Image (cartoon, rainbow, N blue to C red; front, side):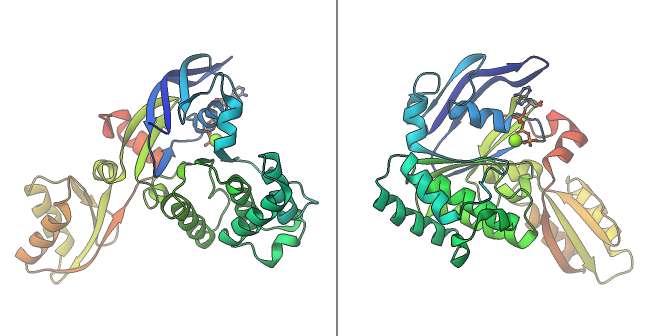
Length: 310
Ligand SMILES: Nc1ncnc2c1ncn2[C@@H]1O[C@H](COP(=O)(O)OP(=O)(O)OP(=O)(O)O)[C@@H](O)[C@H]1O
Ligand SMILES: [Mg+2]
């Protein structure tokens, strides 16, 4: 059974179509939902929770129809909203216990589960302090803890890395991965950065203006949009020589500033082609890194066609 399934799902606001005949299926594991600001990510999540009604089309979550079974869905699903929603004068500990009880757990069980999940998200002694004094990173972790307290089958995480610095972002992504892969909870996680979701997602769904642009395994997606940044040395003009050889080999390569070359990844063999040509030219490979584009850049550069077909 699909974890999430939508058919022709449409949400029309007076002046904008937030979702436009969306057909998408999400399975177990971690699924990244990527799209620029306004693409419809939060609208989709709210419809899946039964918090917002669709204009037309249908959607089901764990086999329950969102239009009629909202309560059943919310019992099985944890939700981490996008915006700050934590009461400032309540501690994370009290808040998560309360949310556990709201989900139907008896008081003692809620206390035990709250202590467990707060430990998992890395809120230790601070959990007894009012959340108003928390850093953004701590607030995001408290929001994640409340989404997990009732041991859901699926969690919907709306921009969990929003506002985080690079190191807290890494910690949050590691947690998301752990939820999906160690706790065995299906995860739908949104971001406007494709690059960060590919690190934790098994599958990526891309929305553009409410339409499905792509839905595929993460590895397939990266082959369609990723590029390699290559630095070579050993001869004057080493970068130009390699660039030329790559183009002759049928790849797309361009100067990337300094002595760097950017090569579009065509398939899994592309890094080997770069290595082989470097050796053939008698050059030394200083570094080769994957570069993933921000999803906005993908849209801007090639339009939808650059990452199609779905
Ligand atoms: N309650 C509402 N009334 C009117 N328009 C809305 C409402 N909620 C969302 N929209 C519009 O629907 C579109 C999709 O919004 P949504 O919040 O789902 O996007 P998003 O992908 O979550 O964006 P972000 O990355 O900024 O969070 C936007 O154009 C937004 O302005
Ligand atoms: Mg949003």
